[in-house]
Length: 127
Image 1 (cartoon, rainbow, N blue to C red):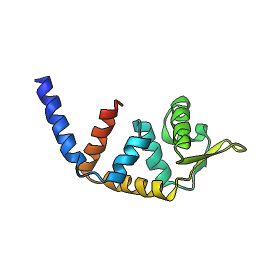
Image 2 (cartoon, rainbow, N blue to C red):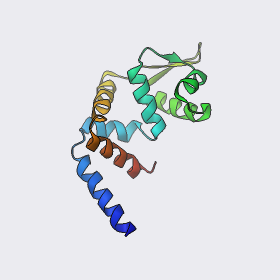
Image 3 (cartoon, one colour):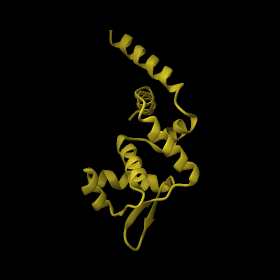
Image 4 (tube, helix red, strand yellow):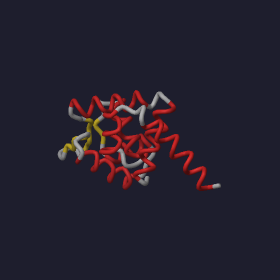
């Protein structure tokens, strides 16, 4: 029974994946490795003017500083965030192509099928 459920879920997710925009797939594959990275990308895209320390982001978003530190450094390495050494703050600064991918990603979240597809890709990555 469990095997049948897994096969059914996998089939549904694979079907939904065909509807997912290629740029969204690339963003998920390259930059989203956890629900925290998903939340951070959506947060910064929705609040591009924010320049915060990890401590301030922890208070805003409700995540532990240690968890945020790891993901924020990773997103900085991926070129989505910039670190200001003087103020110890991070701000949103993706390239135009990454911003377009993120815009499409956020739009795709409005569709149940596309959200399922994103979740399926994340599950396949093992998160």
